[in-house]
Image 1 (cartoon, helix red, strand yellow):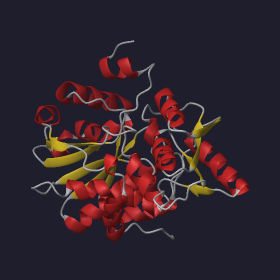
Image 2 (image 1 turned 120 degrees about the vertical axis):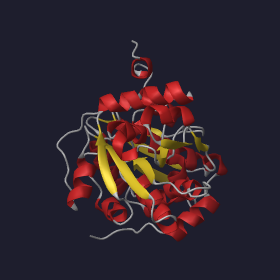
Image 3 (image 1 turned 90 degrees about the vertical axis):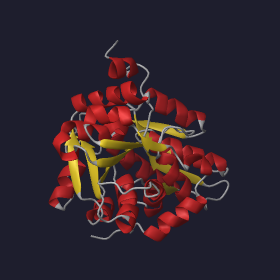
Length: 320
């Protein structure tokens, strides 16, 4: 299997290049959360930036050399598209984002606010990606694929660089898993600088393709996805992402939607932080398997907070 290999040197370069607005995000002991999950939890909050998610890091690093007037095409469940739109606008480039017609309203609105030409496609994220690739090839534009492009993963890997500045080593770092850029990038840095730290990636139970594929060592797509965590609802895994994860991720686990909702509500009640479902997957994994994490120093990344307006109250407070 060929791979665009994610490197430690690339992550270090990314930390020097990425727009500072995305770097140095808060990371702290969330002591009230300890009582809920049983672990000694450090949260890294990737929701306090212009796109309210971690995707700005990889997008900005990937587009660092983009020329004014260029057109960049991507596919997105909404967050990566925001990152690409932000980075393209900063450089005077155009962004065309292909997304599912079911994309979250807040994500769609923000992509358009940032100047993206958003093309909605019937079907899921993977259908949108196929449409985006076809469009880019036909029009002669560059297609940037989250999870396949090493610069995107290296940009996400700067989160690992910042986590390893914590004064004490973590027993585990628990990461949401979608296309794999976050796990590949953070895992690469963490394993290079704290090899004893366990790197655990978490997929949604209703979108188990990455989980199945990592465990089997081969690409195992699913016919459909069914989860509220649409930000990680991957149906067709990317071979390069699986390869880049292979030697830096220790385990891939699943969390179901009910547990994700418990995690979102626990985060709000104990820390005051709002997350979208995909952003709470790390905490959901701790709730799903408390014995595994009991008493251990654990870090998790809260990857996004772009909630749909019509479901936020129900998800967070059980209302509406």
